[in-house]
Length: 138
Image (cartoon, rainbow, N blue to C red; front, side, top):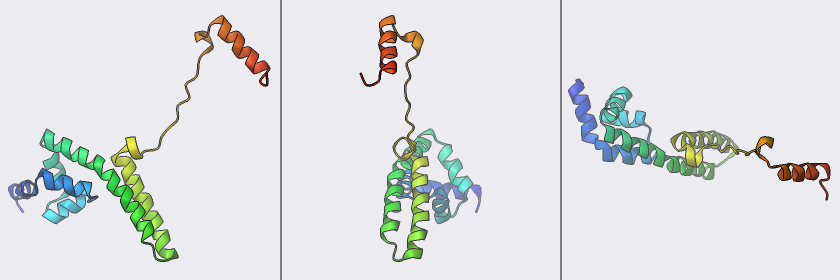
């Protein structure tokens, strides 16, 4: 297939259909195979236009919900011990994909404990803190 034909295949798919497929959980590799082009061609076609690139990025973020639901579904559909073990691995993979697609909603959360430095406390606050430390029950 000539380069022009490959780009025509991507144009024929269009950004709307591409985004729908991404949101449904299809990989770019599968989408590229379905339209008969390489993943590189599809990736370059997406990157060649700023709007296409932005829409595909947003579709990948939205796909995180599909991955989350796919993880739940494979666990619910497991029929036996072997199926459950396989489903757990697949569910773990789907959750990982969700965390990479939308880290804000599905990523690991890190708690940040804000500490007050002694230099930012007044004399009265220092005295009260010292009193609490020396007598925690009172």
